Structures are given as structure tokens and as C-alpha cells.
Length: 117
Image 1: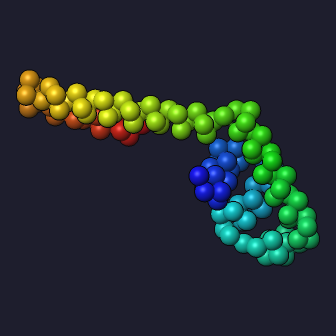
Image 2: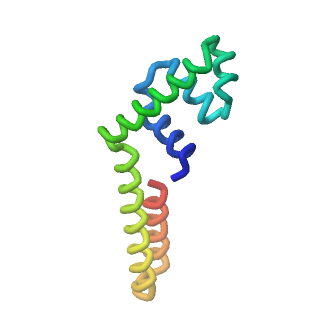
Image 3: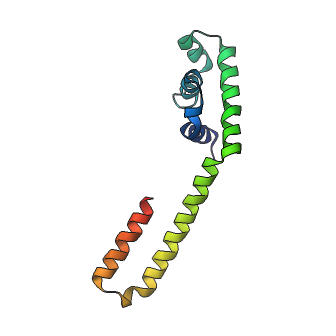
């Protein structure tokens, strides 16, 4: 997974566990793509302070994921859903000739709802 995408996911999942300052600076750096100097000017702190805060926040977010595993759990659940949908679609193809048009439509609607989860 790309580093920026991973950082964005970590912030999405665990951003609520950060202080407001950590969240703002992390967002400015990784999602708004501002430089350390630009963030330092905005926050009226040194570049080194911004760098240290981002580094500590990186460690904290990785620790949250290692401890709680929400991203990994959601990824596994998504893979399971995709596998189930694929199996159901294959089964739908196999039994299509034995279903009425209404049953086929109902089956397709159920698969659509499952795909949206």
C-alpha cells in the first residue's frame, strides 16, 4: 500500500484518538501536502517541532493499528465479502435456468445489497 494512502487510512480510523493539534498538523502534511516549513509558519512553531510531532504521530497511529487492528480487520472483512459475492454470482449463473424472472431479479437485488456493504 502506498505510504500516503496508508497514512490517510490511519488518520481516518484513529484520528479521533489524537489531539486536535496532532490531527491538524498530520492532515496538513499528509493530506494537504504542505511542507514542514509551510506548516511551521501556519502553526507558528519551528520546522523541527512539526517534524517531531509528525514522527510521534506516525508512531502513535501505527501503535493504534498494531493494538486494535481495525484496518486489517476491515480489509479481511472486505475480502470475505468479495469472495462471498463471487461465489453467489457463480451459483446464480449455475441455477439461472431454474429460477423465474422474479427470482432472478430478487437474487440480483440481494447480491447488489451485499456488494454495497
